[in-house]
Image 1 (cartoon, rainbow, N blue to C red):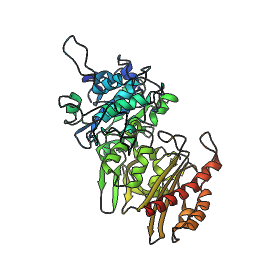
Image 2 (image 1 turned 90 degrees about the horizontal axis):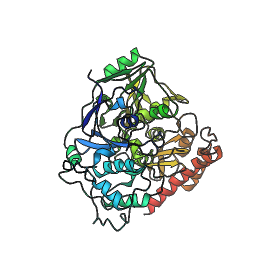
Image 3 (image 1 turned 30 degrees about the horizontal axis):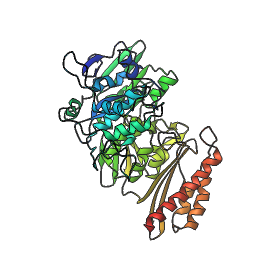
Image 4 (image 1 turned 60 degrees about the vertical axis):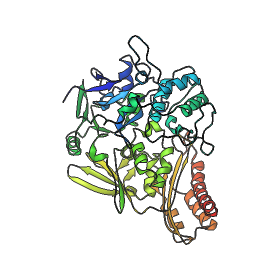
Length: 493
């Protein structure tokens, strides 16, 4: 084992003497890099975002923006990050650094007001600026203040505003920030961060970082990790830390042993076979989204509605399923897709249908020392699919109700129906009575009205600060009616 260190703005920086639970945010600020700010400490505001060099989809390296407030510094041992201070281009000796194009546009278009959120916006915007497949699809006029007339969430320069969905501006300065995003051009050939994409990111390193009575561990292989979990049943497993990081910050959670699995190669594969798709449990949601590229339409509908881009850049399917939350967004979709989980321990692997995985509130059939290795989705996919997330905000919010549909409709008859539900019971569930009410019936308004009545009675919805039980029940039925309206409207066109 070598000394744990992170390359920060090109300089190797020891993690010591930080405690194993210390976040990247605190690690940076303690070293004078105060552009990285703490706003919410929950990954919702983006004031803390930094760039991390990660394996790329279209190039060897992608610059990926993540929430520094959630990730333990020890989790980035051996990796390379850029902060808002490191984005500017170093000038001649004795001269101040030259503004980065993203910084320049934010400045000239008034995108910074109080300035607190600005460094986070800069990092998230830079990640999108360097996205290899971003390209202009119309003549870009930076002063027109207009996006593409057919899509107001993408600029004529190809900038996807979802890249900023995890960044909050408390001064409500979104218009000039949007203008700045839609004004940036392509990286120059001599841009060092653009050139860095052509080289591979740092390889994962084995980590054993201990301070006081706490240890952060990362093994090199899945087999070593599973053996460690057998020996340390008290260990807490983390991948993207989007859930664990909140516990550390808000509830002062401190664990004696934390085991990272996010860089294990055996958990980061994506394979398309003749009869199924297998998705590694430690692939981030962004990586899955870009590698599948819309080939699983139901997942393609899920991703933009799952938290924010900053969270999707770290969060994993394995983590979302492993927490067992009844309001996680991925379980309803995966239930509708009839997914199974590949569970692994030192004794081997077993495959468990997701419909049989959850046993109670945040409980599952997963045994101590067992990991989710992969998610399997059977093929072929049902041609009619939809994901409806009911929440107070359109994006970056926790769902009150989540409903996923996957239907086979042939000659006007529902041959197969799979419906996954979240937020209406102690666990994510399949709407089995509603599926039975649809299968074998004509896809007509009468059938759907009757089945919607059945769906309204699904689960045991509760009342809380997000929604009442009556509202949740009503939204279940309304969701099926909406699906019918969408399919019939599509048929007309």
